[in-house]
Length: 177
Image (cartoon, rainbow, N blue to C red; front, side, top):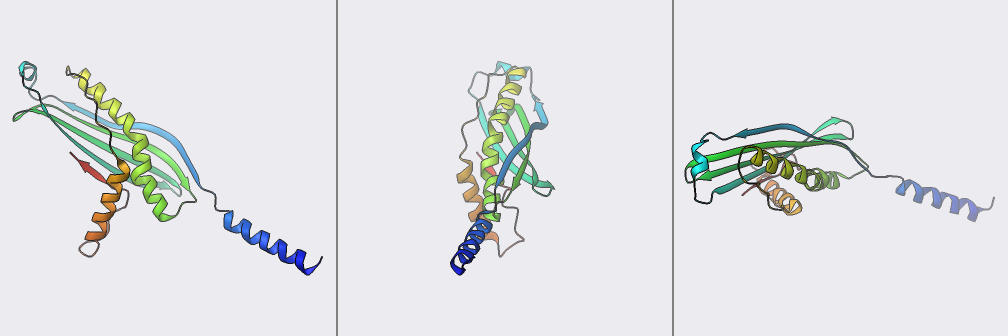
């Protein structure tokens, strides 16, 4: 074997080892962890004629189950009021188990804090709508959420608070509206 062939094989092996890090993203399971519906002022609240105020809060958390396997939970809390009376309150904990490997910490944070919540949101949205209807109220369709923007805002807040307190998990983003 000539020196040039030997060098080509070494270069080829080095290139393969640089490319050997393969990423894996797999949805293992999507499930409802917890659902709650309350209508503390029923049946009188059904007589209200004014349009209600709808408040929405979304929070994402993640935890490692085993190496490379994550449980991500989206908590959606909806509060519907007529003036100072609560018409109904819905809380849905929509979750999923995901296998993730081969990602950098930044990419992993983006997946856990933005991409996976985007996957879970339609399931949570459906559960909220279903619970409202089952409670005797009109269907409630949650507005779309820009989880990438929410995650970027969360990262900025973490950077601003880094000196003041211990860092939070980059995937624990929260949206209030």
